[in-house]
Image (cartoon, rainbow over all chains, first blue to last red; front, side, top):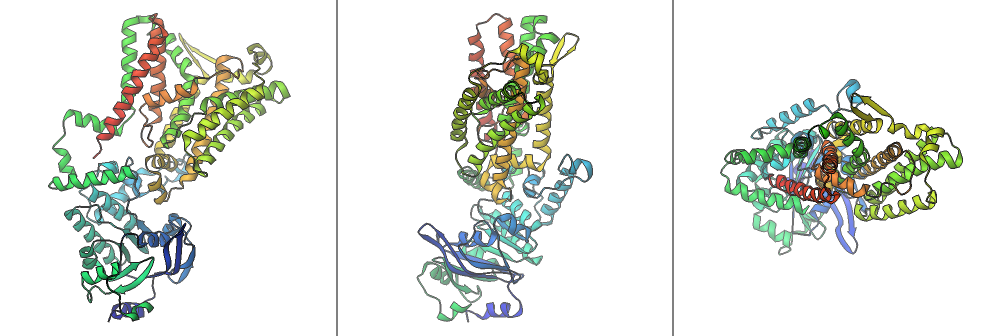
Length: 270
Length: 357
């Protein structure tokens, strides 16, 4: 029963992002213990787990922020080696980190293009290396508009003048604008109020509607059960099982997560 | 990290209390003070500019044409040129949330290399100058490597480099001064930056022109190139910059190397200013450069401020120094007032930061 949804998705399509046997140790702590991971095209995969289960390490290992000690990562069936987040981004994997990775004093447009700025054509751009501000700003405005975030009035305002939800919105818009293949969101609603969380969840669904698969790491069971297509339960550094939210309740998920309940044996082969 | 976390938690609470978007929340509070705070936040060099213009006006009123003459005003420029150039280098480092205590020592060692290479080994002057510039860049590169690769704190690295470079300077130069007349007759190129341009009563030197040009070039690079944006991002939140795909190590290394090179240019300009090459010159440059940067409104916590602010900061110090001297005041008054300005500038910086969220 537990496997039905995964099999139906898995049978029709190959995973777009896959990890096998990932291991990551920090000194004597094993954060990832031969962990597997699969993400299929067009889905929202939630990753849940207790504090310290190694969710963030898993995400960092597949997004290039950490280099795993062992194991392989496959993108569209091809093995990839990311040595920095930039490598992963070049392959179309965008990550929105828990700490948002924004420079508070810089503008929205500057932040959206951080690390991949556009330069003016011709002499100004090639010799004087001048940034193409108008192009960057209009692109940023367009992307925020697409995701219905135009309560933000001025694209030049520094990010620190935005509310938590707006910042999250900008971070998601940045990921959606450049993430052509996979978007990873680490605890996107953790720091937000009820209203702003709702807006971010809507954003996530809008991104899925455009066909981009999403990995959603979250502690918030109602949010996970609301948007996820599958739920990857992480415990003690590895994948415990994958759940179909239609078949299980939130309390089951929490029980698996904390070890209060063990999944049926056949899930090990997912 | 803790900074952004606390930001976020305050966001949360303010969001909870505000009924709708933050935009409307802010609109309730648009008083004059709030607007001022916001304007200063966007243009951090406005404060030093206003202070500079005010101090020129006040000394002008008190001293009349003795101060308010092309000669006196350009004299200020000549007096601050070295500190101005060094402070530009210091600004770059401080923008990345670092600090460079070795700027003065790097400057002096570079000038000594230029002089000694010419006079001790008889190397052609342009080559000696090139070696001096290279020497400055190398000093910056060592600091930069230690900060970006070995991940040592900039304060400690440059505190060590200060001693190392200064000692190297004394050991290598054997504490010898090269006299101005010798340089003038044998290697005038070393005094290039001392060349005077006279326009009416105004007297400028190439060193002054270089300082102003340098400030504008750096201002352009910081505002309009990706590199400049990365410098700010690294100073603002290094980890966030790294996660956004900025190669922070490379940015930091480039900043220290550029800063070392600028210090070497300051060393060249120093020969022009003094006429001679002296290994004991520029002992106060470290403190003076940091003073100019702080008064210029650049945040010591990195990521905020502008290079033009630093130029204004250096000029403010120059205006006070000359103005008080012309008034016949004890030189200690200058230091006292500079001290007040430093504390005032940092207080304003903190106040501007509080404007955010």
